[in-house]
Amino acid sequence: MKSALTRRPVVAWALYDWANSAFATTVMAGFFPVFFKQYWSVGVEASVSTFRLGLANGVASFVIAVLAPLLGAIADRGGVRVRLLALATVLGAASTGGLYLVQEGQWQLAAVLYGIASLGFWSGVTFYDALLLDVAEDRNELDMVSSFGYALGYIGGGLLFAFNVYMTLRPGAFGLESAADAVRLSFLSVAAWWVLFSVPVVLFVREARPAQPLGIAAASRAGLRELRVTVEHIRAYKPLVWFLFAYWLYIDGVNTVIKMAVDYGLSLGFPQQSLIAALLLTQFVAFPAALAFGWLGSKIGARNGIFLALAVYAGATIGAYRMDSSFDFYALAVTIGLVQGGVQALSRSYFGSLVPAGKQGEFFGFYNMMGKFAAVLGPMLVGFTALATGSTRAGILSVVLLFVVGAALLWRARIEELRARDGARGPDQDQAAGSSR
Image (cartoon, rainbow, N blue to C red; front, side, top):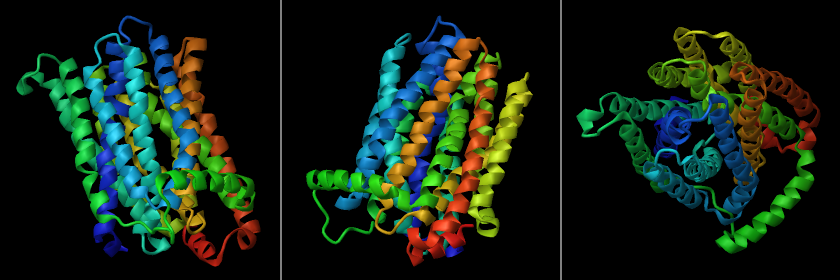
């Protein structure tokens, strides 16, 4: 298993997580929520800016969710996952860099650019996830290779985030006039980092191409037709369907915690510096924890590892409702760091074990669609609840329901898998799924 993590295609594939995690950490979880509340939404109440942030995340996620399965189907029929990954990267990086130009109070423009950058980010993730089955030579490698990608993502994103935080603390050392200038410059650094470390996946990852690859236009038409057929027949893949619904709910909670944690801490009056430091702590705790979950998945099964992570998430969210100090936020950051990469990596590898051969992009498109529809519900749920009650604590507590119901559906998925495995999958998928439990 260790040799799998040293193969050039695996390392190149995992480095894309190192690359795009700069957006997830510095922009999505770190500076964008802070800047959106304190700079681009200056002068409005905390509950209003929380609503705006939730709305921006929700609308962007809805657009991505609608497009993801079609993009995956096109990639499958055209054999162009790597090319579309490169295109999505350029779109996301250019929009992120554009945030540098947005001036104080221009929250609408900031939201639009953030939405386009998110489209590039999540579209890229769809193609990147599908390539997991091309770089893992044996499906028994899925848990470890998937976890390796997330681990590199946490350390890479964390390193750039740490540098950007240092810029905000010492702007004069970089010839900048203020911390606000440093934050704006950090958006440019993310764009450059994202593009630079995406080069290896383009150069060294070779996808399995269809026997007769189609051009983009023909692949779009064929992909759309195939997508309709897949939707009509997806009932045959009952284990996969139950997993998708479970994933839809519990990853909603995970994404909501990632996107809204800093906003929540600011609303409680915690110092900005403490919140950013806690985010950095999460990144570096998550690095070894993601690798550990890959090992754990190979021992107790990916599905059981997901259950463990969801239990920790539910407890941490209840704790977040009661927190009243920066120390509590640090404790929450460590707790989340221990399971965040694990639940993401094992979800991806477990789903990969259920995917029918030759349908990686299309089915991972559905996988990311469910994740993005979940991201529509979560942030908007927190935002509307905060606006309706005037309490961000009430909003964050509602997230617990997503973990509980998601876990219940995941339990149901195993029952359906046992009943339908012979009729729903071929022998290769049966063997692979058995290795992930």
